[in-house]
Structure formats: C-alpha cells, structure tokens
Image 1 (cartoon, rainbow, N blue to C red):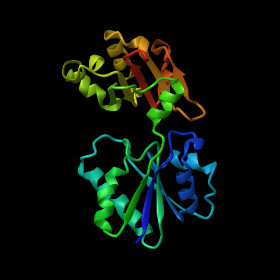
Image 2 (cartoon, rainbow, N blue to C red):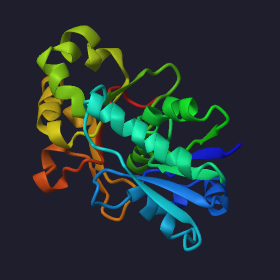
Image 3 (cartoon, rainbow, N blue to C red):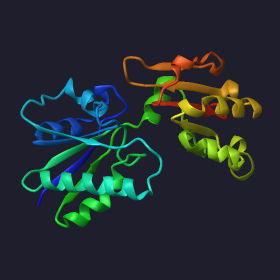
Image 4 (cartoon, rainbow, N blue to C red):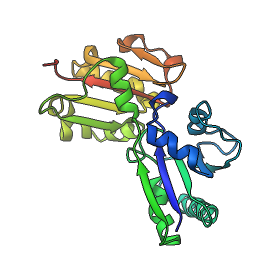
Length: 246
C-alpha cells in the first residue's frame, strides 16, 4: 500500500516549511508538483530546490489549469487524467504532492482527492499542513487576524466581480459590520472595485495590500491609494482590520 503525502510548502519563503515537510520531501522518491501553465514552471518546486537535493528523485510536473469553471466536463476529465497519472507512479513507491500554502486552504489538490481513492482504494493519503499566505501576510503586516471573539471573513476576490454585481456583499453579508477582519484573496483583477467598496464603507484607512509575501519581490503597502498597476499580482490580498486592537 503506497502513501501519498500532500505537503504544504508555505507561501514562498523556504524557511517557512515545517520540519516534517522537509523530512518527508527528502525521504520521498517521487515528487508531484503542480504548475499553472503547461509550458511553465512549478513555484512549489522552486521553493524546495534551495533546501532539498532533488537529483535522485522522480519529479512529475502536473498541469493544473488556472480557470474557474471547475464543473465543466473538460476540466473534470483533466482532473481524472491527472489522478490516473499519479496512481501509475505510486504503484511501487510512496510520493509527495507539493502545494503552495496549506493543502486544506483553497488547494486544487482536493479536485483529485476522491478520484485518487476511487482509482486505488488501498492508497493512503496523509495531509501535512503548511503556513498559509494569510498567516504569513498578517505576520508580515504586523496585525492580528483575530482577537477574543472576533469574526473573520475570507473572500476569494477572483470571484468577487459577480458577487458585487449581485450586491451580495452589500445587502446579504453586510461585510463591513458583520466581521472584524476581512481578507480579500487574489485581488489583482478586481483591486479597483475592492478599493472603491472599501472607500464607500469607510474602511480604506484600515486596509493593507500585500503581494508575493515570502518571495523576493514581496510588496506590503499600507496605503491602498499608493498601489500601482505594476504592484498588482495574482499572489496578492487585501487585509482589512475592521476593529482596533484590544
């Protein structure tokens, strides 16, 4: 019975990998790494290269399309094909699947989870948590995500255009008053809409823009009015602390 370790490698800084993650990556003969473009490279792989020798390992790159239509037949077939490829490489060896941040937090690995188990009922899957981009960003900004009874809202901002059009944020969630901390993830495509929303609700001065935290070109901008077009990045977020500390 083979074991697949699904390992969170953190947001970008190799020193944020857990000791368990490093040990397992060193031990595994087979390493699966996701990449967003078929002709691109894996960011997760680049993170571990500086701390783990990979010359004797079998590295298998898996193309995960960066699209939002997860329910389409074509994408479902893609997930099934990726799962089949992984099972074929796990028949005689254990392996590790590397994912950015934490595996249980918006990781595309879970599109494969059930498919892997259907293909091999004897496969053992163990999830190794990692530092999420939200934790790393809050630490970098020097702010708490929550204190005492605070409530936290996490919004995937790459879907927020539709939400705002339907006035979901404004009339149903009442997000500016219902939560003490608001995190908008992946804000690059909708940054200006989010900025306007925060200005309208009087929250602009309690908002921080962060991108590529843990990487060499990270950005931490405390004034959203100073965020320029070139600062916008897929690996970005806006954290809104809708409550003073204490």
